[in-house]
Image (tube, rainbow, N blue to C red; front, top):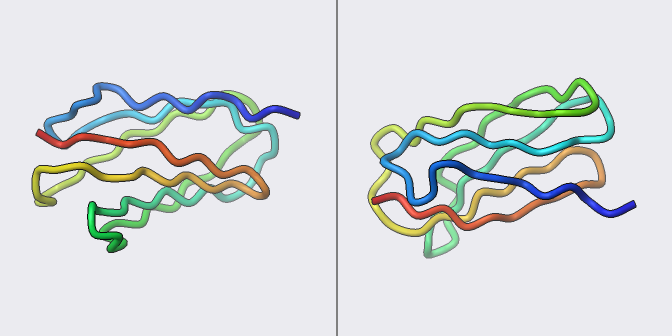
Length: 85
């Protein structure tokens, strides 16, 4: 089936944002932040329970700029751009 949309809000962000999507299978979810030069700068491990998935991310001291937020759960993988102001 078609993957659900993944929403980041707010985007652009001041460093704190939420991720919302629907993940069909329950199980581990990996959230990775990749910076503009392709370096993996943050990894978060969450758990999906099947259905609506929502979590908060705090980018901490990461520099302003453009990041890719990569969310992986089983065979599902989303990549969404996030701008930190």
